[in-house]
Amino acid sequence: MSQVKKTPQSTYSGPIVVDPLTRIEGHLRVEVEVEGGKIKEARSCGTLFRGLETILKGRDPRDVQHFTQRTCGVCTYTHALASTRSLEDAINKPIPANATYIRNLMLAMLFIHDHLVHFYALHALDFVDVTNALKADPAKAAKLAQSFSPRPAKAEDFAAVQAKLKSFVESGQLGPFTNAYFLGGHEGYYMDPEADLVATAHYLEALRAQVDVARAMAVFGSKNPHPQFMVAGGVTCYDALTPQRIKEFRDLYQKARAFVEEVYIPDLLMVAGYYKDWASIGGTTNFMDFGEFPTPGGERDLNTRWYKPGIILDRKIGNVLPFDPTKIDEHVRHSWYEGDQALPPFDGETKPAFTKMGDTDRYSWLKAPRYAGHSVETGPLAQMLIAYGQNHKVIKPVVDHVLKTLGVGPEALFSTLGRTAARGIQTLVITRQTENWLNEYENNIVKDKQIVEDYAVPASAKGVGFVNAPRGGLSHWIRIEDGKVGNFQLVVPTTWNLGPRDAKGIPGAAEEALVGTPIADPKRPVEILRTIHSFDPCIACAVHVIDGETNEVHKFKVL
Image 1 (cartoon, rainbow, N blue to C red):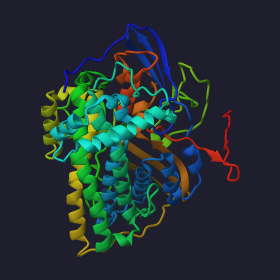
Image 2 (cartoon, rainbow, N blue to C red):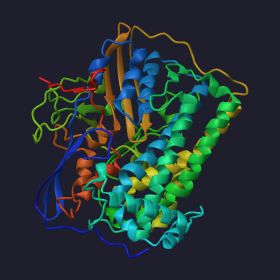
Image 3 (cartoon, rainbow, N blue to C red):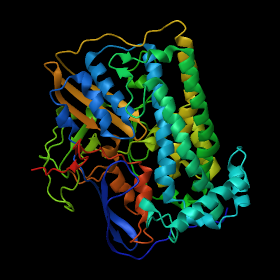
Image 4 (cartoon, rainbow, N blue to C red):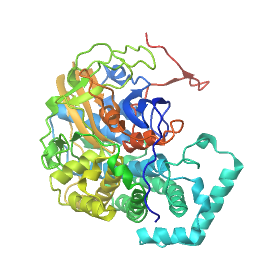
């Protein structure tokens, strides 16, 4: 590995607008003010109205999960789970142990799938110069790959990828990659050609690995995305109790585990080794985590989860505070909604009031959730920091090992690089723990075959479903009136991370993280993409109305 370079910085002063910010789920516009080559101020603008909260009013609460899954095209299961947990909380009834095991196994595979997609398809291209791989020596690339992973690496395999890449670039048929920052000539990219070739080869391999993980989810979930195996009270996948289905799941899981341990984590360490300077760029201050993976019988008790909920303020890792859901509210002062008052989600309102694109006062369709008045980051970094501060017996040693390998201290976690590394660490620990959950599930079904509990929808009740999705803290809040949905609010990870300022003018997590970021080329601000992509944004998808005969997407103006 060549000597690590330092992020270049221009002398530019002025505005930069990235619209649309690509390689994310949904629609995002980022506006920044740059002074002397560094970002001085940032605004994160979600540019499409969601509207699901309005659609759900008056519907049967049992149908909600089928609508909320359409919030996102990637993490459909987490929305189904959050909606189902909110109804179960309102019903106030436990679910069978087998249902908890199956839900945990499904969620674990979603974490693996989501994080592989994020790293290879969405985020790695912020660090990997694809065309630079054409300069690589395949034999040296194989040697480099072998130094990070026990998996055999062959020069001829890298040579084949290099030849395929060469024909792709020379064809000029680059499609969405046209003018992409990662296609050469940007001084902010500084990995060696061999490292770029290794990462490019594994990018292609990851596309196939993701398919196996998606198939594993379909074993119990019937299909993926939009699984159809879950109801309030448990699950309905009786085939999951058979040895054949369990073996099918295990075989696919083991393939995924091998890829995570032998490819993903080594690639992450390789890339991080070149970009250690990013361990001091893109950090935030406060962190929130709901915990996840409940123990059987404790589905509604957050403190029984495999990793626990918690709050960190002012980067004080050694002082993890208890999580209190009553301290959550949502601000709309700088969002395109009526009103200025912050409301708790149970009382939340969704009344659109669009002004104009580029407005610096009201500038986003995202609301601004706050915890006890604090802007907080949620997601893998928050999850790993809180587990680290709680001395989690599995997670803390892995974090320490990664820090030691990179030669950095815990303070490096508060950064864009730390956020990216935390996602890999989270993938690794969940992947390994899945083996234990699968064994426990197999042992349990020997004596217990129950997977669902009967229930009745109450005439009047309220409930909240907390899920730590791959992107962070997700919660669905339901109020039932006359047996129907009286109010429903989704507070999703990306509103926590990418939301706008609140009524006090406090910026959202991503807006905070961008401040101080150096910009090398204002016409190609890859540095903005690095930090924004490190959050893995999933802007709550808008409602699209399509003509079934013409396939035309209809556009509507909100008055």
